Length: 223
Image 1 (spheres, rainbow, N blue to C red):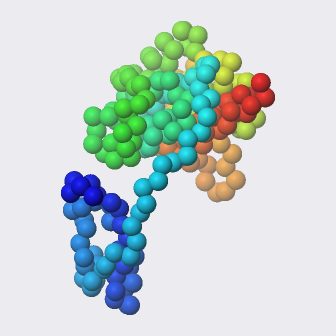
Image 2 (cartoon, rainbow, N blue to C red; image 1 turned 180 degrees about the horizontal axis):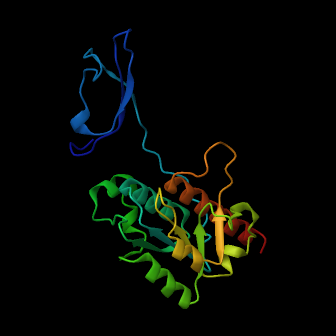
Image 3 (tube, rainbow, N blue to C red; image 1 turned 180 degrees about the vertical axis):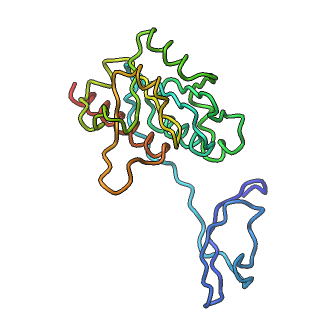
């Protein structure tokens, strides 16, 4: 193995009172002693480098655009980049207001290079952008827990792919800007059956986009 290549491994502490088992993913953290108690921690297993299964391409036809409106967390933004790449159904990601761009090192920790595969643009004013998108014939859909919102599971297979859809995700605390909500003919929510009213925005984006991908695959399978 070349000296510059590093293979992830598992180390396990030999102290029976500690017994810490942990992964080592970078050379600089690969020490032969336990980070918890200092006892020897020999290599117990090595990760095998396997090629992930690739699924058939379902990306013909209309694609979705995504607006991130004033997200506070760079980590959430990076995670959404990765989801957009993974679903393969996002043609444009709009980063608005205080939302981090790929210039932010924290964002790159969760995007893991996905910022290189997803087209993105920065806009200082999300409301101005959404008005422009609507004037250009786009259908705005706010993912929000409003009184008008309908469950994402009630939308048909055709909804996401017979219209030019723009999905809008808002600030983690404040939600989507009320003026933007007023522009949106559709409000979409994810059913919450517990005591909490909403999900983390990166999780909500993942559920919404993968459900849209599922609807597209189902639509393609019946042709």
